[in-house]
Amino acid sequence: MAETTDQRFKITYCTSCGYRDRAVKLSEQLEKDSSDTCLLVPAEGGVFEVEDQRVLLFSKKTSDRFPEEGEVQNIIKYIKDGQPLEEAQTNAAHEAGHSGGVLDWIYSLFRAPSHK
Image (cartoon, rainbow, N blue to C red; front, side):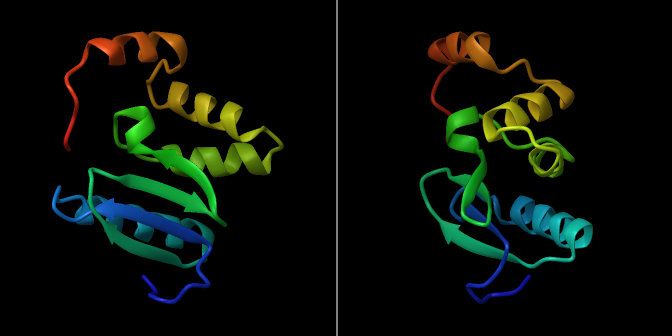
């Protein structure tokens, strides 16, 4: 985990929510899979976001969940294979067992706000 600003990946995580361990684990996986470095950025407000070259790949705030094992790597793979970002995100979510789309949005209307 490098601490300079020239990393390919950036993971922003909420410190008061205890998300650091998840961020470290994901950064280690990304660094191992890609041989690129990952910047960890402490934040507040329940955030857990993953960026690749300043492109937001995954956001806990918008998905109301953490990425599943391998999901971020699949998004990267699908983009590399030519899929648009949104399609890559949807396909990776489906592969990880999440339906996504309109149904998740409707269900989210009835869920209590999550702070973790």
